[in-house]
Image 1 (cartoon, chains in turn yellow, cyan):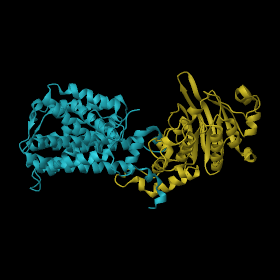
Image 2 (cartoon, chains in turn yellow, orange):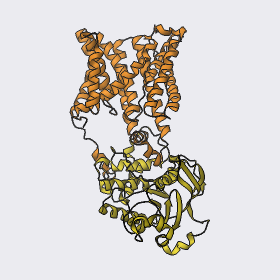
Image 3 (cartoon, chains in turn green, blue):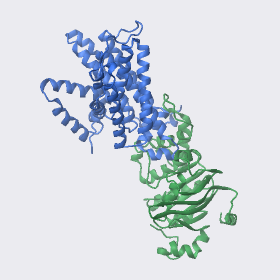
Length: 270
Length: 327
């Protein structure tokens, strides 16, 4: 994938799926997003890395619609979305997972994913038939569970699932609407090494079939998965490039990777 | 549908005779037999008591839709009893006695009011939502007091119960009782279908995690609003029944403590359970009635009982029967 890195340099990108320009948001005195210009190319895995407080979660909020920008634009699939509400962006194919597992805890795994499928099947003003017997929802939901390896846990209630399984279910829900772009907010958060490597495998299997914007602290995972990385520090993107470029960028090493790990960005970063 | 495609159904509670189911079936059977018992023993006053109980149970069932399945604590639900009741009373006074006009007007007026209140109040949540629904209900309460033509503070006597072209005679206490009972069962069936439909899952998902619902693509506001309107419309029908039952309507029907009573019934019976509001209404009203016969201060005993249920029993009386206690 690094072979095509050259085509990503330069301004206008032909197959940009998502493009932000001058995206800015302040909270009090803190500029959490400072004129962010970011381009996500179709079917790449694009990781955002940066130290704590760099504005990664704000960026996800801006893209998904929970945070309103003060300035700047977000173009997604050719249309301007920066003033659309969260649910509209989701319906357009911009799905997200949450950093803190955010599932419907008293529903089964299948119900959770079926609900996500339902959201993309037009309106839900259908008042009479039992939605749990709707194969148009169950079928795609089971397929999404299959994709994340939870097919045999379909009937399990979320609050009876392990943390790792819940994180996988998060991904299944995000996948359920057949999104074009998946925003993953720290999918490895709180995971042990085993669960982490299973998640890396899972995401690697998704690679190519869906464009992914990945925010993650686990550097090992990031460098294993990302086609390109952007480094976010104090709300600014200080570098974008393929893993090799980023690893060797002196500014990045000084600002971020160098802080704790010297020149070994393969190590875990908490 | 193939069995393999629906594993979640296996997780559904099996339809066995749990203590809760036995209790619910027993309660419905008792309600069904009240007039029989009353006339066999000559205690005909109990028909009136249970008619009132059933009507308020319909109100509680309607409140449970938004409170138990939608997480919206409306502290102004008695307003619909008032709107439904006044629709019947005002039309009756103006010479329109047909239930085919009165009842649809009661339902439509309540739905319209719910649409306005919901559109404004559902933009807030938590305590603010509770306060706004209360404020609107108080407004309607004072509007009713201001209706001089319709008795103002003193209320309005309804000389003729709603007529249905001779099909049903509401003056017959037993007929009226069974009509209310049938409407209660129909409401519960309606809610059962609703909460398991596509709409119902959208609503329950919103109660469980609204932020997530938006993120997966649900415009949650409009589902909450529609639930709010359905709930109001159903409670408006209960108001029409109540006006017919008492043959009298006054602002007291929508006093804010009545809204509180409805909330208590829902919580007492178990939030978000289909028959919970009925259990809650029966227990609450019978306790109130029974205690007022032995003491001058029934609330002094009723209050602490409600507190204990609210604090210690998860899922109300229904939950207690299932052996659920707050951990």
